[in-house]
Structure formats: structure tokens, C-alpha cells
Image (cartoon, rainbow, N blue to C red; front, side):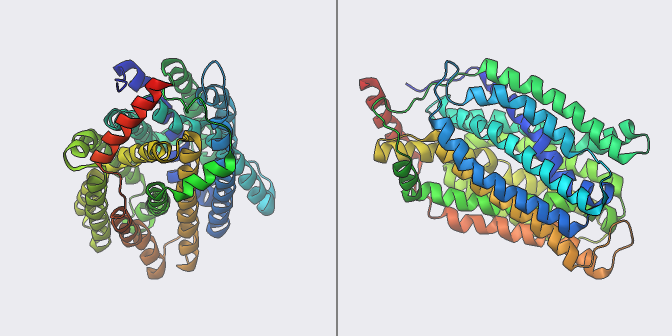
Length: 447
């Protein structure tokens, strides 16, 4: 029998993603801007810092996955990381947005060190959090529902960060942007502690590995890369997150230097996030009607097309820019929870085919791929700004404006549309998930 999750447990679990988004979106939307326009680091140096930090982050993800799979406590395998990782996560978030005056080289070293440590803390808490959703229930549609709650809460965190961060920074800073950003992140960090504790208290791990399963890292890793479904999802994750990182990092520059409406970037981000939240509940019914794979393919094609169309908009076409962004965000919203649902299904598929379950490894390796994309995308944004002759806080050349426009429209649009090509080869359909569940339930009942 599939475990039906209560409303309380879904909400409790989802608050962990709100807490995660407080840092993820401060980094994704504001950190490159913070480094260049507040802390005074060059765009090339800032982009390189973000790439190096992501590669470090990627290196530790599989380690965390392997360790969490082998963790056995009275709280379960994944929940302890949420409980004990929350405080380091909060402290390092504050330090990352702190601006000690250390000279040009010292600033780069400090920024690099704090960002690497923050991403380490983020990995230790967010990766087990993601894996937790896969072991709360074994039903693919319940997982789709749980992930819908998760991303509504997560994008609500994004709504707060993108819509209020600059306002809060101005309020707390009183003209001092550095102080304003630091105090703003302090507030988000405190809220994160509360939300992570609620997640820990309200969730339960139910899906366990086979009792006879012996630890074998070599076998688990080998099975992972033989699992075609997971490999495809990893590639899609890399491409998607290159797109997300590039666009998120560049949008502040787009409004400040192209549209000349720096303060309006918050409203733009808020409306885009609302569009995401409104469309997220469509994920589960669309998946039941058309299947996870088909919904994802349609989402990537439609969304990518409307992102590309943003490039055509002129400065005076502000309403057109908003409209294209809203349509694009609503189109890709259903695919967001489905990606994580399919990763959980690929873990089930691995157990079904091999008799071994490695939930933490599957999610850590998937997150590894996505963070690779995020790091590459953020670095590319910094490098393209540099190649386009971008200079902060001055009027930009036509070349720089073209680079900024490409970063928020054509490049991410083409990347996201390309995800549809990879998803054509994804083979886990609704019939397969039903058969997997039936066989795995019978096996667990015998144990």
C-alpha cells in the first residue's frame, strides 16, 4: 500500500525548502551583483569564485550521499543532517554577505573562502533534505504531490528573497548597502533555523533499503551509471541549472543597465515567482494525464521559446517583457517538481533492477550534476560580462548591453529547449512505475 502523506507532514517538509531558498536565491540572484557592485570585486574574479566553489561543492556531494546512505540513527538516515546542519548553514550565510576591508586580493580570498564553506554547509543539509522526500512515500504521484508542496514553499522563499531583499537591504542599511545586505541575510538565516527544525520534527522516513543489503560503494556507483534514466536526468539537470544560474545572475544587470529601472527588478522577480507558484499545482494532474516525461518535454519547449522572445523586446516594451517572462515561468513550473519526482523514481528503478537501494547516492549525484550546471552558468555570466566589456556603475557600451540581453533570453532559452531532446530517451513511464511499485511492495512485504 502506498503511504498517503498528511497535509501537516507535507507542509512541514516543504518549509525546509523555504529555508534552503533563502540562501540559494540570495546567492543565485544577488551574490554576483553583491560582489561586483557592493564589495568591489571584478566580474571575472567573482564568476571564477562561483565556479570554483561549485566544483568543490560537486566534489563533496557524492561523499555526503554515500555517508547519508550509511547513516543509521534513531531519527533515520537523512533527518539528522537537517537538525545538526542548520546552525553552521545560518552562520556561514551571514559571513558570506559580510564585507571586511581586506584589500583587493584579500577580498577575493575572503569571498572565495566564505562562499566555499557556505556551499559545503548547504550541501550537508539540502542533499539529505532532498533524499528525505524519496523515503517518506513510495508512490510516484504522492511524491509529485509532496514535491509540489515543496516547491510552492521553496518558490515562496524565492518570492521573499527576490521581492524584498533590496528593500530590506535599503531599510537596514540606511545608505550603507554592505550593512543592509548583511542584516537582511541575518534575518533570513534566523528564519531558516526555525523552518529546518519544523521540517525535522514533522517528517518520517518510511522507505528502507532491503534488509539483506550489504555496503558496497563500488557496486552502488556502478549501478548508478548503468541506470540510463538517472543519467538522462543528470544531463537535464546540468543544462537546466546552467540556464537558471545564468539568467538569475544577469537579471539585475538587465534592469539596471538596459532598461534603466534598477528598482523594478524586484517587481519583475516577484511577478515571475508568483507565476511559478500559481502553475506548480498543475504538476500532479498533468503528470497523471500525460506522464512525467511528456509534461517535462512540453514545458521545456514552450518555456525556452518565450525566454528567447524576450531578446526582441525594446526598452519601451516593458509590458511585453513581463508577459513573456510570466508565460515562460508558468510553462516550466510543472517540470520543477517532476524532475525531483523522476529522480526518486530512478532510485526505485535501480532497486527494482539490482536489488540495491542507494537513495542518498542517487540524489547526491543528481544534485552534483545540477550544481555543476549552476557553477558553470554563474561563471559564464561573469565571463560574458567581461568579454562584453562590462564596467560596473557606468553607462554600458552596445556590446555590453548585447551580452546582458543574451544572458537573460537567447542563451538560456536555447539551453532549456535542448532538454526536450534528452528527455525523449527517458524510459520510465507510468506503466513502469506501477509495475515497479507492485514488485517492490511485494518484496518489502516478504521482508
